[in-house]
Amino acid sequence: MKKNIISAMIAIALATPLTASAQTVNLSEAVQMSLNADPRIKEREQLVESARALLDEAEGNNGLRVSANIFLGLAPQVKGGFYQNGETSGTTPRTDGPFPGGLSDWTSLQFAIIKPLYTFGKIEHYSEAAKGNVDIKRGDVRIGQADTVMDVKRAYYGYLTARDSRRLLEDVQSRLDDALSRVKKNLKDDNGESKQSDLYALQAASGMLGKYLSQATAIEKISLDGLKLLTGVGMDSKLQVADDSLQPVPLPSGTLADFESRAVADRPEMAQLEAGMRARRALVAAKKAEMYPDIYAGVIGQANYASRRDTLNNPYVYDSFNNFGVTPAVGMKWDIKLGVVPAQIAQAQADLEALNYKTQFAQAGIPFQVSEAYNQVQANYVAQQKLADGAAAGRRWMIASLADFNAGLEKADKVADALKTYALTQAEYLRTVNDYNMYVAQLAHAIGETK
Image (cartoon, rainbow, N blue to C red; front, side, top):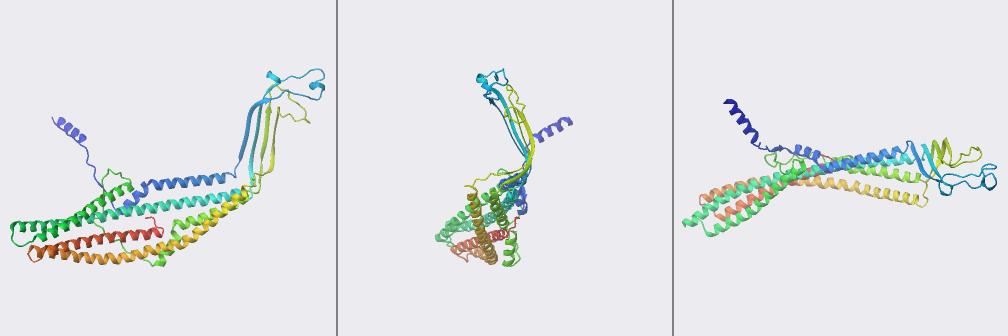
């Protein structure tokens, strides 16, 4: 009996689906999850691998080079010779092969194994350009990581702002509904404590609050879905944030000059520009080196065989259809396109000059970005402090107005004004805290941080 009961309990437990618990993350965890999950970063990492392979290709040109060509063709019949009328001996005429016209099969192989000795800088300059390209792609990865961090913070703080705004508006709406119920009761009882205009004032305020509440609810849902997308947990998964409410982050310490110096030193764009300049200079030098030959050493050989032709064993006569030879060699090889190389040099030089101007703009533009973010941080830090005091005063006004209204000492329109003022001031405070936090994030982004 006990065994049957235990078996039934196990079967029920296995058949009952487990309720998926919501995953709770803080901002740091959300950032790390997103950096690990973002396919845009993985795409850029693969472009780094592609650039490394291009570098290997450039450096590989300094290794052994093997070229070979083998073909099967037809050799013509022998015509002419040392003897009168094309005879191969004093009395015997010569014929070759069973093919029409005396044709013969002909197998030919030419091959060369060479090692570059000196290329006048072609390999070195192309390799240096490829190294610069690798550094540029690495910078793209850092930029992608910084962009992902900004996206996560935007979604995270946006969610907290919308959630706190919704909670605020629900609280105000609840208080307003209580006041509306009291006014409606007074009007129904016709006790003279409320007027019809009181009802209209509160209903107007309720409509405005309802609009803001609906918008906050939608933004809360959108922000959380965005956070799910970025962290890679899936849109159907349950995700919660660890913070109970939106709070302003600490004010970054340091002067504007300190942040500008860090940006010039740490921004991936600055490293990319330096790598780009190095790569472009190397590319110009490589294109100029294309005007010079390659000096090489190696082994060169060939073999030919025509099965139905007699081998001409004469050291003074070359037989191109039956022979074999191989020799070590040292040589120079030119492969110059006289009309193309100057154009390629001009193109590389123009690209270098264009990048130089871009560098000049970046050196001026990046400090401006830092200055903009820094001043916005300072301004919004003060603004959210002032609004915190205003929101606290607005709440006290709302509570006092509601108490006076319940005691019959305050008019409904004044209560509506107090409710709306508190709701708008507190909502503006939350929005300003969100702006402040995002400007702090923007400042970190501007100086090259990726966390």
